[in-house]
Amino acid sequence: MLIGIDVGGTFTDGVLFDNKSVKKTVKNPTDNQNLQTTLFFVLDELLKSCNPKDIKRVVISTTLITNIIATQSGEKTALILIPGRGLPYSYFNFFKKTFFLSGGIDFRGRVYEKIKEEEVIEIVDKIRADGIKNIAVVSKFSNRNASFENKIKQIINDKYSDAKVITGNEVAGPLNFARRAVTTYYTAMTNFQWNAFVDDLQKAFQERNLNAKIEILKADGGTMSIQNARKRPCETIFSGPAASTMGAIATTMDSKNSIVVDIGGTTSDIALLIEGDPLYASKGARINEKYTHINSFAVRSINLGGDSAITIKNDDILVGPERKGPAACFNGPCPTTTDAFNLRYKLDIGNMHLSEESLRKLAEQLGIDILEVCDKVIAKVINELTFAINNMFKEWETEPAYRIWEILNKKQFIPEQIVGIGAAANAIIPVVADNMGIDYEINQHSSVANALGACLSRPTIGFNMHLDTENKKYVIDLDGYTGKLKNVNNIQLEDAKKIAYEYLQYIADQNDVTGYATNAEFYLEEQFNMIRNWDRVGKIFEIGIQIKPGLINEFTGVK
Image (tube, rainbow, N blue to C red; front, side):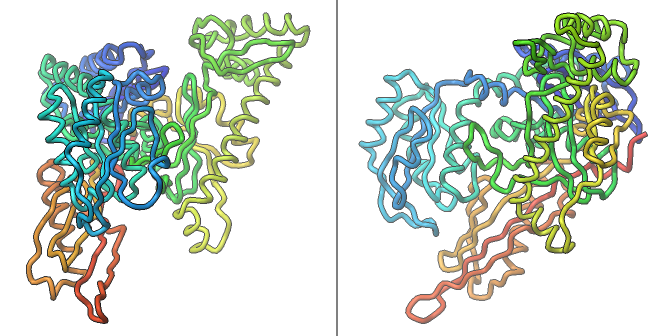
């Protein structure tokens, strides 16, 4: 048996899944001040319907990191950068407490200017004086040579033992210095709270005699072990939209071009499936308008949900953005978007009389018919969702996968359906789809499809390998591993690919996901000759390999 739990901003959903069928579902309001309480309540409700010993795997999607960053409630953090030659330091002054060191490493990992220990000590003294205990350290090209970062970390540990240091080579491997710096900073900022959450999670499992694997959903729709999640908390940001997207894939199991719209209580998330596969953000997840090295779906969230409050201001009807509670039809304090759709289309959701009663008060204030109030609300909702979807297409059109599809198919991309996710999808999505002139799909499990998506997502691993025959070494950017090469004169592209695949197999074995390594794919295969004095002195290979996000091998559909 498998369990999936999605801790959303408004509701926390849980699913107990076994043998192609959903055995039990749970939906409970989220306590954003204490996510653990909500999560454990949902877990306990699911466990009432099974023997804990039968649970093999639990996957959790959580808004914790999103909340910490959005509310700026993370730990005070300093960022130490070694940019080397190139752009002025001011370009990389991303955060208030950013410090710069001299020194430089080139793109092949060779040191051309050493760092100065006295500079490091001076900066550490300033950081200590500011009472900052979380420090991110990033050197340009440290994914080719981590010696600067490792030395700075050792100096900090010697001079300031209370500090917690996170280095770029540990958590942000791919090239692009700016994105590596931002990713490492946010990792350092959220590390303490995230690991406290993981401690509580593991303790709760022990108390319940749960020996199941604990995995965390990532922004790219794949999962990682709880041990790996400790080191990479920011990988979990936007896992909510990832959960709903994977839920859409699990409940449709088709190859259509689809828009996924997850109508939550407070917000709605929009994603795209191209022939059944999710579209990724090629530049990585964007946090506070800064790009990162976090692999993520190309998604957008808007402040409109099924529980968005309907209010009046200056004789005009406003929809959202605040949520004051559940819909009136569920004994909520005020009318919401769900109530307007409920009454206008006679959907019989909850107590429809309560929807009518709450909306009638607004109609009397405005001096108009109650159905006119519904029509105005519905028009605003449709316009906002349609506008957001159309705007997303402008962003999606810039993604390589989107453009390649149009080139290969020699036609413009046209969505075939909207896949509705969330409790309010039944009320809102049919009307939006009709307005856009396309079909829609709402599965019987759509209200908890995000938890189902988390439950059924498979583990993923991916990395880039830089292999340099002249330097007789290769570097894996996932964890900074450096390997030595022999017989360098005979290495060809296929040999480089073999080295990368064998290391992926090793990591898969270490993480107990060996069965998925056979499905690994290469997404980067490049070879460059190194020429000096008209002679070739070596080759450089750039290899990218991954276990692609998708559904677990044993999943064939859901009843």
